[in-house]
Length: 136
Image 1 (cartoon, helix red, strand yellow):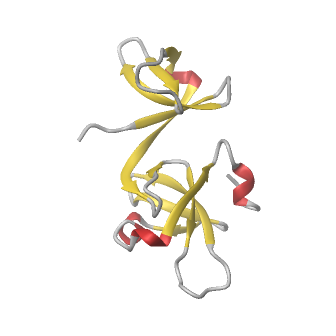
Image 2 (cartoon, rainbow, N blue to C red):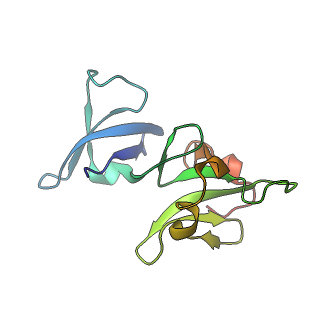
């Protein structure tokens, strides 16, 4: 499997799709995430972007889930409130959803449940207001 990456452009504050990475020169080729495959790419220093890898999993709407995505989790049906958290990777737990108060929902649980239970509603860079009260 070839990993899919996206990058947060720190200077322009825009999400970009990673086309290639040159580790020898520490340069990343990126395009705006919304552009078509044949559009021009820009080069960035690795220090000028924040890289996020795809989980390879899609939400209930078919949207690919990446590190840094904000997810709405319908964990308990008929519950009065949905849970909202962001996706973070750790070597110990894999991709985990972090909820307010640093509660962790580990990959082994959320990735194996019914995909209709969660959806991407934003990401921590473009939509931090969705996390209301969270420290991130």
